[in-house]
Image (cartoon, one colour):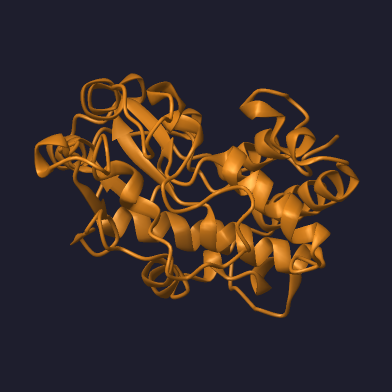
Length: 262
């Protein structure tokens, strides 16, 4: 299925990056009618696909099926410039390692990794169940959900390996290897918009039942303002309050009457 008209504006990695650079890009992307059309088509595709799924497993595709809702969410993230193939230049949240590289002029694509803070298969399950319960009843609702809960943190590959890519579990008896596809505060059967849930808790400890000695050591910054994120207490509501100030993350830019100057 077509993803829409071809983008005429691509962003290249220059080595350094500042909060002002990030905000400028996001403003340009919001004002680009081609990108807005591609995002709208992507949301409509996800809605149709999730509506047609007969089971939650079909929607999640176990994170690998190319035509699963989970994979289409990754395509949506691409349109927001969150994927490493887009150099993570749209990432609002960045690890300490990424911040250091950006400030020193050392950003290079092979050093980067996008980390889906809320895993895409979890989002896919929430969308499937939200459509079945009619809490997500149209593409407009879905667009708002995706824009507010598509949280991706840019990390370095070294951080991914040394701090995150280690055996961990969130519950007694859980296989340690499952952490990449699960979240301690979000699950596939959750209702949409649980504002008290904590997206970054997944990075806080390798085992939530153990002491501070088991903290991952990852630090995360909200890049546009330089605010340090408290991984243990930060809520979805706090994240939404930040992004709702950015027209790019306003669903009305794609399905409503929000006017954005080119």
